[in-house]
Length: 496
Image 1 (tube, rainbow, N blue to C red):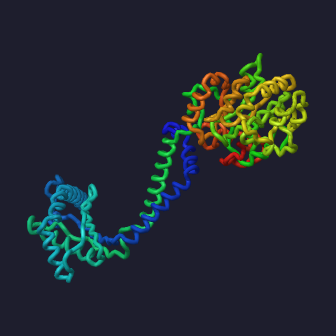
Image 2 (cartoon, rainbow, N blue to C red):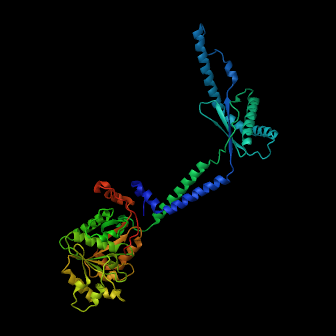
Image 3 (cartoon, rainbow, N blue to C red):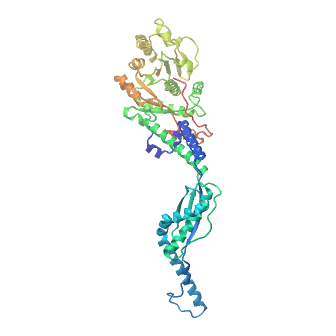
């Protein structure tokens, strides 16, 4: 699960969510745009006409020299008095206008003005009902008031603006016996609808679709109970051996003999090196010799990790043997393109004293031998728990530094439990984004006493866009490699 704190620490997670749930986000964006288009098509267009009114009393122009405190003696005094007179006029007009604003707004919205305006409109052959609305705006420290009229009919909008202002001015003059209201310019004639603004509505639809899609994706992620980071596994108290990022063309790692890759797959090689080093440090004086690699669910990548661990150990000058113990769905022969009909099942069923080298493919990788499997026995659990299987492992211990067992998935199957009884340690592979925490809890309950043998977990197929694991981008960049590397992509691992 992704928390809000993680998104705050790493905003790149938002892009990762959009990439993961891109179909959902695209659907909501298309719905938003579709809704906006329908609204633009069905909404009744509205037209706006504006007329500006000057709140000014002409009688203020008659203000004389009284109160200036200056007696004119020459032309300079007259000029000074004119300036003072003008300044006093402006200040007084602004004060009066600001004080009259509440009263003027109430007056223009009164029934008397409305009836007078309606009468003028009826005389201009407009019929009931008169569909228009208006609002008054006046700026601070200004004597200008704007009357904004909106109507579905552009002609009615213009006529209503004029009728309102005329009726308003007449009523104001009748009540105050002083004319304050006069139009600066005629009512504006709209040449296009003021609403809906089609581009604005489309943008709002796009934005709403994107926000809703992102919110739904975030909710899905919050409700997702699959393992995505090691933090999700912390309550299970399992050691974290390392993680393997999700990359494309993972099968190319099987075609190279050496444990290296010059392309974007080097991130997997680096991750496996870390895991191998961690396993070596677990028991320096008494290293683990027989290790089972399993998972809770199929298709988690356990075979891939077993092969890569073997290559890493072989590159460290160890003799390693991989045995395909998944007797229900063997993969090693197919993945590594091995030939021959011999394998583990044939060896276990052969007479005692049979040379095991006949069932082993030598030096598939440097220092790595492989015992694959071709036959699927009718009783795989009994065969893995038989004495012959234990004796085979004891025989191989004298020839190899480490034996890796590619086991079947452990959840609701007894095969991995039977193998776990005879190995030195168990490595649990967890597929990020697919393995549920509940599945891991069930698996640990099923293993019971074998839990002590689980040496740690490998988080496999980790998306490079998730949280702090984005440092793989740095490993994949030109700083370390001297060449541009393709960006890893999240795909399904073809290996079981």
